[in-house]
Amino acid sequence: MTSALIDRLRADLAAANFSVSALTGLWGIEADAALRRNQRVPALRGLDGLRERLGHAEPCATLARLFVLGLPVDRADLDVALPALGAAGAEELGLAVSVDAGVDADVLPGVGPVASGAAGTLRPLLELRPYSFVDAHGAGSWWIVSDLGELALGHPLGESHVLGVGGASLTLTGLLIPTPVASALDLGTGCGIQAMHASRHADRVVATDISVRALELAALNAELNEIGNIEFRLGSLFEPVAGERFDHIISNPPFVITPRVPGVPAYEYRDGGLVGDALVEAVVRGAAEHLTPGGVAQLLGNWEYHAGQDAFERLAAWLAAPVTPVTPVASPASPASAPLRPDEFDGDFATNSPNSARLAPLGAESPSNSHTPGAEGAAGAEGAARAGAEGAHGGQQETVQATDAAALDAWIIEREVQAPTLYAETWIRDGGTRSDTADFDRLYGAWLDDFAARGVSQVGFGYMLLRRPAAGTPTFRRLERLPGTLGHNPGGMGSHLAACLAAHDWHAATDDARLARARLAVASDVTEVRHYWPGQEDPTLMTLHQGTGFGRLIALDTGLAALVGASDGELDVGSIVAALAELLDVDERELAADLLPRVRELLEDGFLQHRFA
Image (cartoon, rainbow, N blue to C red; front, side):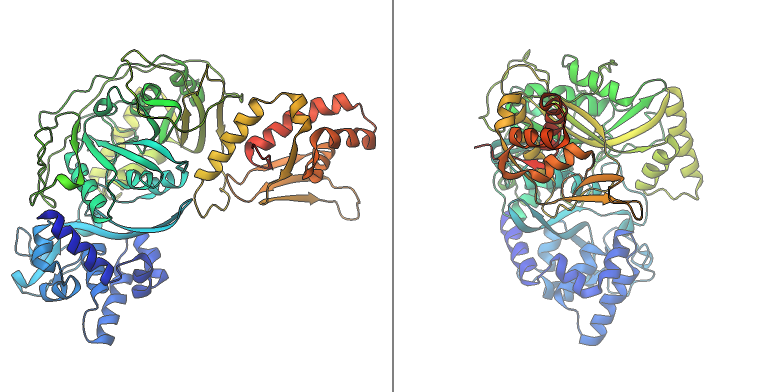
């Protein structure tokens, strides 16, 4: 029955043109921007103005008012907007409910008095938003169901809140390497957005979460968007996939550093239940034994700076140390490793499989299912460095011995660093607590007490790319800070990351003699900028600028500028170096010794390209 209702909902949403572009057309670009700031008044004025001009409620506008703005609508209008499903079907799916069902219709948050009508007026129980994107496979659009935000609720979020597509989700989806693979794992799937994106390049996807509620919404999203290659499993961290390996592991883990003291909310979507950054550490340490040879893990994370120690030293220790076993403390309501598929749900969203957990109805209140896995921290003094490694995506799922673990290649990019005060303010507000309240001050003090007690001076945020070597030991270790503006990447960064890894693997396996025979070309997005003092013929500064990828800037000297300028894909590197040595009247070997390592860096960063076939 549920699948039939979801089919009707899908057909109605498509018929109403319930899309990102349609919503912008309804209320305008400025209202779009206001909504991103959690302000709905401009959008509401746009919808009201449209209804006044038309004399009736347009279907897309009704859906936007109910599911995006979180405001009540007339039952008759919803029947028109959802002709196949109907308002009754929306109630049966748990998307909406009559305003007289457990809510004071006269004081809906942020709306004021609501017209009487009781059963004739419905309010949303869930958020349903259109979502559009462009990736390496082309343009796409979906509809995403999640829990109501604080704007619709009128109060701080509940601890079991299932978040929709937020800023961190968009960041990670934009980083996903799109190389086709046999298997992918989305660790901590939430509403399922990463698993859905992974389904575009993976034959099979496993999505896990500790939250029953998250899995039910993720399964609904998969079925609503006709994605059938995702399997959903209940459990903590890697527990649901014990003994399995994947070609691509993706995780937007609950990395927010939250005080583990009574009275501080622990939101499932962002708080992992461990002290400090131990949750991110547990994911990093556990990835190796769940990757196929050549497999890649991509995740976001926070990491702490402790007094007298650079955070990169701690990150290097996570990568170098043996895997630390993680022992989850399971909630009685959360049996581990329960497989949940979108086609297994009946009318009240319980699974038909005897091994599956029973799920609460959508839209209902659900208790927190978070449990606290344990992991031991470690500190080390391994510095950050560049080096070579071989490896590629691919491989089949295979069984892993419990003791099987391998150190990983790693590329970690720190994008931002925050002081404890700013970090605390950011995440207290994220939970919906207003800054002018006593509760905000209480939480603020708890955060600062926790950071002070553990000697935390700063918190970093960034991207982590881990790779299990296809063979041999890992040697690729690159930890860097890139706080500036990224390049223009309309299809995401994933293809750029894949190209950088391929370039790295090629040059790491190439000695200087072979590199000298290579014909390289400048990437099409690279430009050169020269700065001159007025009236001078020679530049005082030369730089290369990358238009895509990380938008890197590289300082040039005369020799490197000339080599890059001559790299047109026709001349080999050795011939260019020989010609430059003669032109500059320098020793050819010394010039090659200076330029070839820098050519390798330009290849790895994407400034220069080589056809690897």
